[in-house]
Length: 399
Ligand code: NIG
Ligand code: FE
Image 1: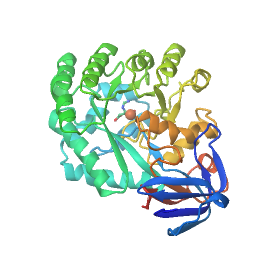
Image 2 (image 1 turned 90 degrees about the horizontal axis):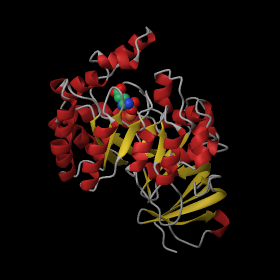
Image 3 (image 1 turned 60 degrees about the vertical axis):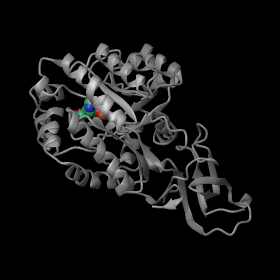
Image 4 (image 1 turned 45 degrees about the vertical axis):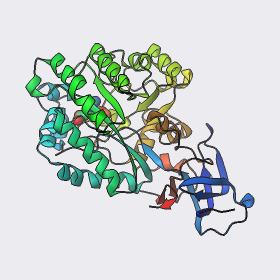
């Protein structure tokens, strides 16, 4: 058969079923960037393609980090110290710090500076086997700065061998020039920022922060209706600090995902399961904010709600640069099983982004792979730190 490249002497975690679809001593063949053949090595058809001997490594689909705020100016280590001294995330936000302090640093940076600041963070994720990263805006909070963030995110995809998926998160906080006029800002987002981001092809989806310190469910619904009118899928930061009915709201709008969910109620989770809305769990934020409420994983499991795991990489609530560490935290903090955690950074993370061409190793899927020097897949969740990644393949090419 005609292949471009073959990988063999590897064990495969295909993610095609809930037990991870394991194939011991397997082989994968790529053609035109896709998986053309996958199975046990003994069944590999005759071919004359170049071969990589993986030396007994494990191969998974390239990992997908489906919720990040990777592009921003400055950092908030000073607020980290304030929280250690007793201040809460909400207190800092209400005092003009938090998201607004990153907004000031982000507005002050040009596109090249945003790109340069984000590159090492992206490289940290890629070094662990990530091949797709979602990046949100939400630190510009005005037309040009929001677009600049999204352009920097797109530019990252040209600088590195990775797929970048963008989300417009202009409804993240109310900027100071709209203080006391939240409705006017939301109208500005709906009538000006959203249409421009859509017409310039800068946003693959629209996100919002539905929360007591951010936007109301009604405002979120208005934004979602406008996004869908422009043909853009929606997702939501929901029920992180308070239960505002965000899970049910996301489900009612057919959102791709609802994210955080620390305080979601069982009815909301049931509605998500029914709507096919993926629950994106962000243990980096739970840990950093020393949250005492955890997402109700047992209810998600019971209702058959798909769960994804992500870094939520951002300078405030989750300065997390390791998706493998999130696998560990998903298991230790949230009590996910190893298969649930691993599906959460592959198959279900792809679903959270509306991507049907990746996240599973199967014929016809993109040939995005991560190779690991481990004895068992559970090691990806087990180690606290260290990096067993031995290589990445993006669209059939070693990256
Ligand atoms: O996903 N919850 C709101 N947004 C981010 C935090 C943003 C920030 O603190 O800068 C989050 O946790
Ligand atoms: Fe977030």
